Image (cartoon, rainbow, N blue to C red):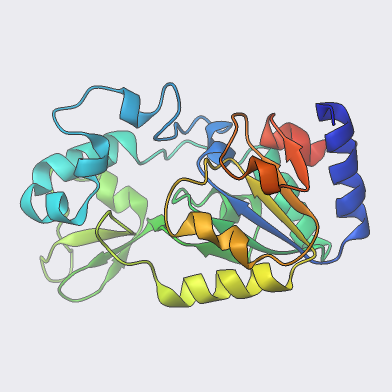
Length: 242
């Protein structure tokens, strides 16, 4: 099926459905100017003293606080980023009752900024930060106001981003809610993810319907099981025909 016909089919499916779930990855936010980790210009293809995957690990965080926060502020916080066409269309679909949940691997909060309310952030959010000692919460701008590791204004303890680092466990309640939403939906739209990160890549196995849509600019290992495959922009695919 050619790309235009696939997008037309997707629009027809969306128009006919009242129970859609969207599961997205970094490719959703690249159209807002936020680089992914694995793309051609992603963090894994840039030079650092340590590999990015090492820097955003629990072990590195514990043992190299200054270097972690330097990398985190420079490469993982994008305070000027705005929602793009994909975020806005997903928020619209939720508002009119068609989209029941957004499940995202992203930590940028752009879905909520666009207006989505039922968002499951399986890797956490840069907009939530908490003191490890007294649990006072802070926003992202608080982290940006420091040069080194951020300290709590209430007790002086270390403030940690509420993001899941490599070596940390995902929140089980978020996982359970995501799986439940996928099991119940008529259409599962998967967009902007290479489907290589465990356990998130196993989520699609819980979908039992016959309208699995994969939207990604490059092929994934799950392309063969998709009922509809679109290798193009997520924003373009979601807004086709509007």
